[in-house]
Image 1 (tube, rainbow, N blue to C red):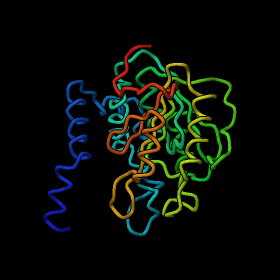
Image 2: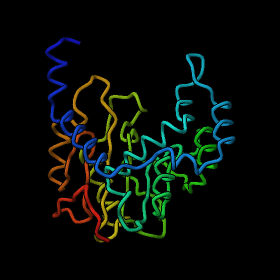
Image 3: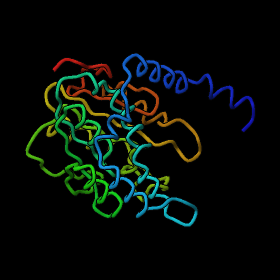
Image 4: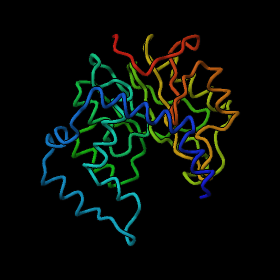
Length: 247
């Protein structure tokens, strides 16, 4: 990478927002080790043994690194102030191995995950964490299954369900697909003061997390965008805050 590009990335809005998030977390520290200590150490070790890492093993085995992912998801929860809010009802879309669910449960929240059931590693990790999950796909222009309740937060971290032909595909949902999805979440899954968080994976070409078209559309829907995240309120006329402590 050329020096000019490195300097640009260092002082980009995304980099400055990352610094802000880190500073915000440091004012209210949380011990990831203390959360990790609530798990059976022998079962954690068995998971790593059963899903070893290395060039000869599947990349997905990285999710068996329980200490690392507990730490990452403590940071995710802190960025939403879930470590210092009253109990919330939380739905995690594409919950994967369930680490975000477990951390939120540790902080006293009521949690539910939604994802496919096609990865034995995720199945075993969810069992270790005792994290509840509903099995379902997330497809364009298809309503999510009725879960019989509404939530204070619907979150989706490092999502790839919008990539129509797989995680490495360059073919993604259009703004019309996103409108259907967001309207479905707002009307059927969010409480009156609820929030929807969409946290995006980096793009393969290293460009912004959002195309100009997608950023413009999200902003038109009332989103507050910070780095890789787009946060929506239940009411499209309101701009939500990441710092939310009121019930």
